[in-house]
Length: 436
Image (cartoon, rainbow, N blue to C red; front, side, top):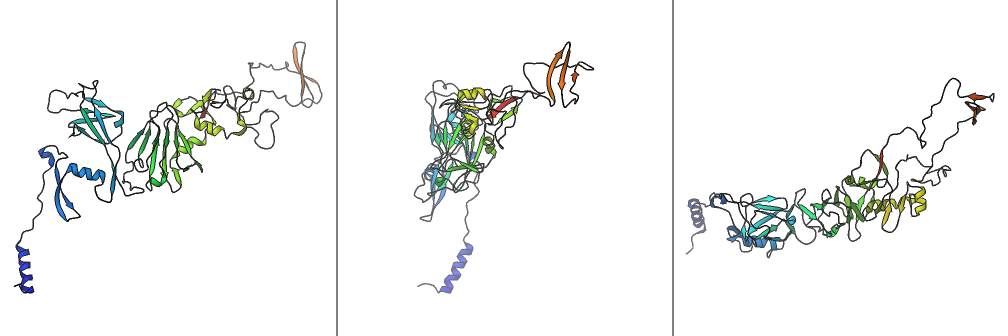
């Protein structure tokens, strides 16, 4: 027979007051007992059955990397890189793999997790094995297998992914033609390392790229030629109040791009690289990796100076394809052939403004920037001639001396001319170079 509800409530209250509540006691650090492994287990609450269970870390890792049966599917950036010790490495303690440079990874030796700074030391593009507590150094064995798990988890639910709050979420090295991925490469430092090979880096498609994403591309090391950055699907790069489908990055440059609704927007002053292309500037010295070359009439492969070639095609009459015209006007650019461009030769020349408005210049045969003008002497006003009378040099004058008499230059003063093979004003030498 059930108790009266009022009596039952009093009994329940009494039992609740005398039964002690239990909690999980303080837990010691796992390192007290040694190194943790993926076979260790932790407590897990299963949402579907409302139960607390235990699960090993290996199973938990599998769920996190594959998504399990949930609706949120994480994406693991990168793969497991197998590293097999070669005969040349055997007996040593150092492993070098360029693929590991700039990467974040877990390291395992034949399935056993390795502990950084205890079992191994991180190097640039590899690692060194350690053996603390032993007088003998660790020696690698031929055929030994290490696994480097390159990692970084991002949540994807279909469509653009949410980004972490880190300003730069990782580093990616590109050494061959590559199309960047909107999820895996957004908010990353893209290190372009093409050496002397021309490579093409294709920007991600906007539809698969997270909102507010940016890309930082740099060519500060490992390049001797200009590398091409291009878009896909007709999307544009906006820079200098204009739009581009292709950009070229020279040696030692950095380009910041932000995803917009209709294209990529340049965020840093990389645009200055394009503002002065092909324009002569004076230098006291020349450094090749400043992306500038001498104005000395040298021929260059258009493929090696792609952005200069794009710029000079907009220079109008300053770009010619007739060698004879160039020989008579060496300040011009010459389109030598399909593959070759010749730059101006401004050595031993002064630069002078051309008449770009108000008609032609009768004193300049080709009135465009780069058009040549020979030297000349202007006869002073009123001088009608010079003659030698005996041992004296005289000048016939009219308006200067209304009497029309001859003026004896040897009376009262003498002239000591500074003679040379050319006519020139006082000057100071510089090197003329152009930005490429």
